[in-house]
Image 1: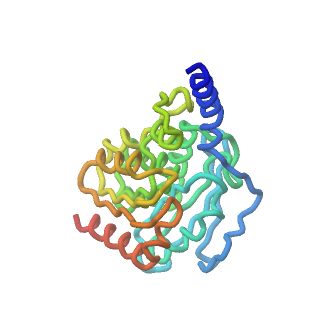
Image 2: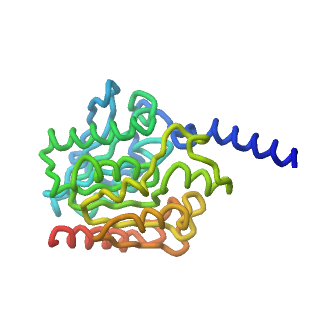
Image 3: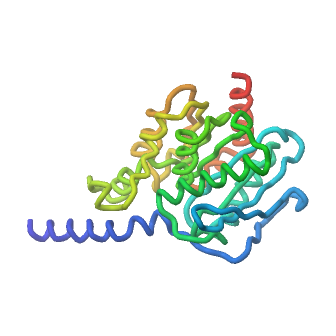
Length: 274
C-alpha cells in the first residue's frame, strides 16, 4: 500500500510539473517557409500586431474571389507555428473566403510566453487587428479552432463577439479532462496546471451556429472525455461530425479534403440563410 501511495504521489508531482509545458510545447522560428504553398503570393500578406506588450505575427490570406465578403480566423493547435498548419490554411482557403492565421506568444516569430490568459489576450488582439485593418464585421466572421486553438476561438465566441459561425476541431473539454484522460487518475486540475482551459463550460455561452469535428479514434483528446462533453454543453443550433477511424491530426484527410470542404461550405451557407 505504501509503495502504491508513493507511486501515486510521484505521478502527481510529475504531472503537476509537466502539464503546462505540455500544453504549450511551442517552438519559435525567425521566419515562415509556408511549406508546399500553392496560394498565389499576391494574396499573402505577412503582418504583425501587439498583444499585451508582445509583438505577434500573423498572415492574412485574401480571398481567391469566390467568397470575398467572408473571413475565417483560424486558431491553430499546439507545437510549432503557422508553418505546421499551412496545409490547413490551403484546404480552407480553397473554399473562397479571406483567412487570417496568427501565432500565439511564444510560437513561431511571436514574442512572449503563453498562458491561458495569454491565449485569450492574443485571440482578442488578432480579432481586433482584422476588424480594424480589414473591415471584418461580426456577421462576416467565421471562427475555427483546432485542438488548443479552441481555447481561443470558443473564448472569442463566448465573450468577445457573435460570429457568423464557429467550428471546433478536436477540442478538449478542460485541462482536467485532458490530463485525467491521459493519466487515468482523477486529479484536481489545480494539481496539474495553473489554468482551467474550460471549453466545456465556456461553450455554453456561445450564441452562434456551432459545428464540431472529432475523430472517433482520437487517442490524445479522447471523444468520450472531451469532444462529447463540449458537444453536449453547446447550445443549438449545432451539428456534429464524429469521424470513424480519424485520430487527432487527420480529420480532413480521413474525411477526404473535398468532403471536408463541402461540409464547411454547407454549414456556412446554412448560417448565412438562418
